[in-house]
Image (cartoon, rainbow, N blue to C red; front, side, top):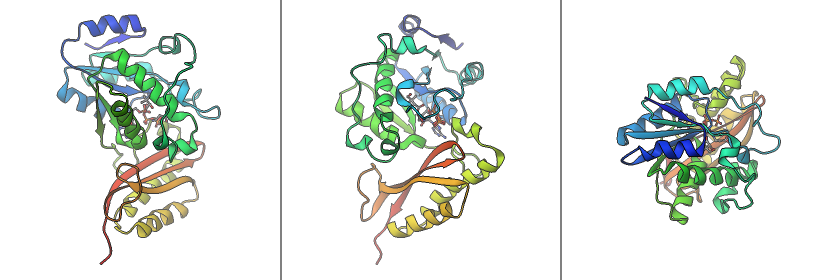
Length: 277
Ligand SMILES: Nc1ncnc2c1ncn2[C@@H]1O[C@H](COP(=O)(O)OP(=O)(O)OP(=O)(O)O)[C@@H](O)[C@H]1O
Ligand SMILES: CC(C)(CO)[C@@H](O)C(=O)[O-]
Ligand code: BAL
């Protein structure tokens, strides 16, 4: 049985009956196979999984897609039921921000100013602020985040570490369509032609990751993106595995963000660099 609650009072009452560790999967709804994988991973360890569904206005910029973000609560609930989720928390804006827009918010620091943070000013502050609130409201002992939003996962981990939050942050590898496209709620905005163009993102990352020299990685991935006219690249960057500087050798990360029509997509892959001999 999956319970649905909308208010923090009903959430608290439902959590009182949880017993055992509480796991949380935070989402903005429009659930897909990527979200389902997070729920399944959570269920493997915890009997009581809470899914939150909230399109957080604080993490959207003024010209972003907050208004048009898909809202599909009935379908989302059916998915949560099928995945054995104990509780769905789908609050209103007032339930999350009862005192209006918060005057004290999270500062994501230097890690929040690169990549997505450079392109979406204020995004990570708004994201961390709501994540911290939802961690406390759901009393989670463990929280699951997808590697698709790799910088988000890194920032949430760092917030938990730096602020001594009593929660474990667990990452889940990106779930892809059979042709490589990373699942994303925003994929539903793509026309068939745009979806074909969007495949260049995963293709570029896959091809880049077959190389071991930083220059070759970026050249290979960059060429595939440049050859696809339907894709407007925001960034293509190689970093260390923790989003720090590129190491001379060892684990690294290749990340891309691009617009396909009006839809902004992100993706990333792990790779390993080797020194030329
Ligand atoms: N393809 C995926 N594989 C693994 N996890 C995912 C995937 N897509 C989303 N997630 C994770 O699900 C959680 C909720 O994400 P969100 O609701 O924003 O979905 P989304 O598909 O990323 O939507 P958007 O289109 O807004 O990027 C996040 O932790 C996110 O990383
Ligand atoms: C973690 C999150 C639910 C916070 O609003 C959101 O950023 C998302 O869906 O990835
Ligand atoms: N999936 C990350 C949330 C956002 O794009 O706002």
